[in-house]
Image (cartoon, rainbow, N blue to C red; front, side, top):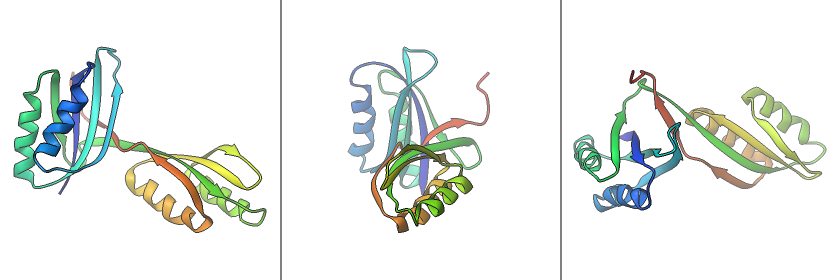
Length: 160
């Protein structure tokens, strides 16, 4: 089963290593990991996507919550959160294929962030399904470079 964890941590040296080590030490492979500051510069939010057994992950989540510098751990369930991912990719184009690539970008609301004679750099954001479908359609044109941020997520419910 796939789990999306949101971990609020103090923005301090070594916290990422301790948290990631907790997962690797228990045999969990991290699918995606994203860390960024929050509105409070002394805190960061880690969004981690892992696959694993519910019971074992529950134990790891509880142990992670006990780590120094960890403020809060949430294991998001379906429909409890909003998530997005960002992808930048360079795609080969010719004068014949450029209009079709631009049309696909329009349908998916992807942005062209750089245009060269023989390539386009495309930015797309969305949930994992949207991003994956876009990549499947565009790869026929020839993706020469690509980078993905991994998932970022927030709870639908306010903590207030």
